[in-house]
Length: 582
Image (cartoon, rainbow, N blue to C red; front, side):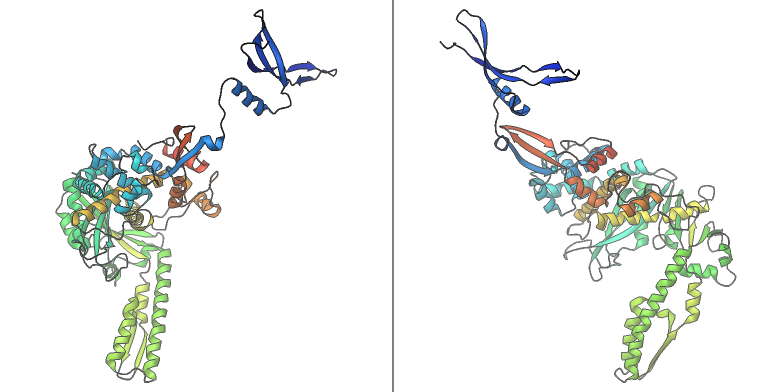
């Protein structure tokens, strides 16, 4: 008679024993048994099979099934529904949170959420607003769903831009309070970007810094702290002069930021004599700029104070001159710059001579006649490389001769590598070496322009037509540049950035890369991990995905295991990889 209830289980009957030689061994024994009670109610076990020959994982699976678990095929029960790039947006979000960027923009609202998403998107994927809105709505990023902007319409995006530009003054004032201090240094420079279309109200023909001749453009001035953090930006019509934009920057510093004493640093085209006259009228405003070439030549002429003997023992010297009352003139000579200018001048002269020889040959052979026609051809060649002042020319109806003006060339070469910085900042505040360093730090503004326009944020070209939308686009890019500046600093270890720039004994000489940086350049590897360009690092971070997994009807979200580089990137940010952008 069969028992009424039968329960099967696996019994581990393995035992240990000692051999004759004293070694401890295990006798493996797994038995499949059933438990029941006999007619008298006493518990009994019956061995059904010896499972000892089966692998451990099969025995384990059988044991789970006997306990009531259901085993399913992994391919059928486990499904990755989607895998979305997450790491790059997460890195930008972590840094933005450390900078309190959302609270910097303004109070919580729909417009702020969209503006914040626009800044993050511009940082990791610089595209048009329409493309960005489509990116949010798709399944290619976690930005849209996590920040609640996946369904944002085009009108909402433009409304957020209008809201952002309405808060520009307040946001920039907060940035200035963070990074500019009274009596400190601020850097200012001007750039431009061309405009697509013909309806933009700010577009005008002007000096193109993009080399896009014959294209209308807009101009914008960028104010930064000494280290290069973007603080404020102002958009101008495309034909605005540098001095006019600088005057606007001064007004912003004094009126909007409430800073009464500041040292403004700008190049010689920005801070002109006229602007210096204006600055003299403003109490507490000091400046650092440079002289133009004619003014330098005037100082060096005859028995002027600028003589080459100043540089016999040092590469810089400080002088004064009655034409610059109350100012210090720091004269510098950079031998590396001198060699480069000499090389470039010779290349330009040689290239121009080669083309002039062709014109001379045509005139000698009678293929080119008439002083007017010959002069027109010569003018095109001379103006092409801007070296006409170095050639003496004679043109008749049938002949053309030319030669180099050696006296002018020698006179110009004597000042190769020489530049003069002018400032009204007292020596007690900044010494000569400090003034030189402050002026050379304008390179950080140029770096910001490069990052904003081309390398990382793709500001140009401008597609907006309305003036406020153009201003909002440029301001949005400036805020993204602010975020990018901090990301680049944090990720310096994983990129080719030099983290240990050696101190330069002579401020005039160009900076040198450290031995550690040169090692990274050659090996493309730091002591532990490969190094990449900043953009390539963001691309690598984007491969850290957030996956939605369906396991037997249960949906879960998990991050892919980070690579060593991805793990180190978030360690440098001081935070774990967030599952969501919240």
